[in-house]
Image (cartoon, one colour):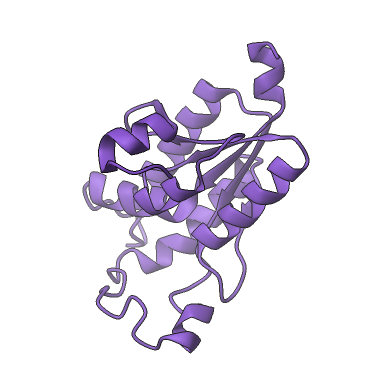
Length: 175
């Protein structure tokens, strides 16, 4: 398969929730004239634009966490209990970022009771079953366990692919 046909046969799954938090912490606090915080929106849009421009992906979706509670909280009530809630100035930006994603012409996907990681894993499995390549765009080490034939990751901050060799070099174990 040549490079052009591989890109055409690749589904890019973007960890939108990861992008949001990276953007929020990377930029200073910016506000609109009405006082709404938009620093994470700007950072997210810049990251998504760069990704779309650089990768020229034909099949792409941004996957988001639908909320803090998932089915795991029903199984184990203390699941992620140590994590603080999102900063108040970030909360109104979530909806704006979803709108911005759709304005880019990119599907914005989330499902109640599931984390973005769950959806990314499900979409990756379904795509591989249909003989499609998958590239997970994230630097979240939890997602590295999904790497296998047909599934790789791409670290958008370092602009490097992550495969089994990179996982082994970093952690001393295979995905």
